[in-house]
Structures are given as C-alpha cells and as structure tokens.
Length: 203
Image (tube, rainbow, N blue to C red; front, side, top):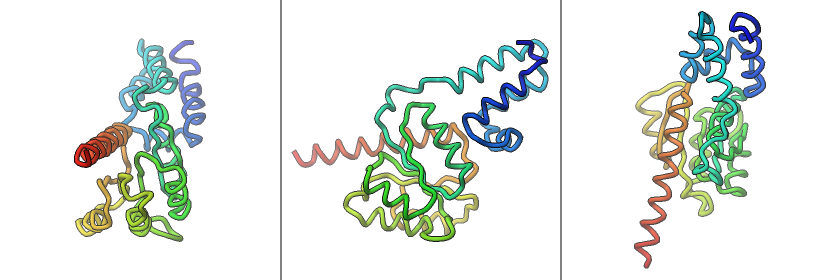
C-alpha cells in the first residue's frame, strides 16, 4: 500500500472500528496515544508505511498476559470515555466492565467484584460519583476495591471530597492511555500487597 494512497481512510476505519467514534474528534481525544504516528501520517514521505505498521501493531496487540484475569470496572456516563478506557485496558489484557450510571456501577461491583474501579465524579442524573463511592466503601462486599475518581474539573475541595469518601486516587480528564494503564497497574499492585500484609498479620 502506498503511503499516499488509502493510508488515512484505512487508519480512520481501523480507529472507528475500535472506538466507534468520529476520526477527527478521536484524534483529539487520543492525541497522547499516537501524536508521533499522526505527524508521520500527515507528512508520509518515506514514513507512511512504517507508521501504519506501528499503528496496526498497536491495535492488534495481544496485551500483557500478567493482566489476564484482572477485572476493571469503568463507571462513566460518557460513552466516548467508556469506550476509550475499555479499548485501552483490553488491549493490555484486562477484562473490562462498563456502566453508564451509578446504580448500574454499584450493581456490577457487587455482582462481579472487580479488581479496580474508575469512577466519574459527575454523572447526572442519578447518583453522582461521591454517592457511588460512599455506597461502595460502606458495603462489605465492595469496600476493599480500589477506586479512582475521574473529573474534567479539578479543585482542591473536590479532591478532598474524593479522598474523604474513601477513594484511592483522583485523576483529571482527559486521561491519557499511559496514565490510565499506569494507575491501573499501581492500583492492583497496591491492593495485592495490602491483601498479603493482612494475610501475614492474621497468621
């Protein structure tokens, strides 16, 4: 395939297949994922084929076998955000559940007991993120599941509110793939370490 013929349409179709979203808006959302590749595509002199191969490998990767069996729950009323986070995590081998509302998220957390939860701070109508986290942390079935809050607006008061209701982390939107994956790894590692410490203390 010539870098000048069909590269952009083919890339666009692949991205829409993965994320089910408009290509131009998707580029803005996922800029941190592939801005280097994108710069090569719009100036594909001698680089188009290489960039396309890298992007194909990126989307067809089999993930990290160490993450197999790890279940992540994403609770967010934004469809684009849910699909982006699910696709990013699944690419690295995680199993992902998504919920568009607080009530649905609580139900899934109680039924499936995920290894980590990413929770939107504002989700009108219905339960907001603080209320969801409060319910999760007060339930014996879900209180030990680590929670990360996500929000498009960051204020000191909002951050304090998140930690007050028991959340482990707070991240601002838009979240990059690298940040999402790194915090997912840290959350699970911290939780597993805590379980080992508790088990050793009970021996």
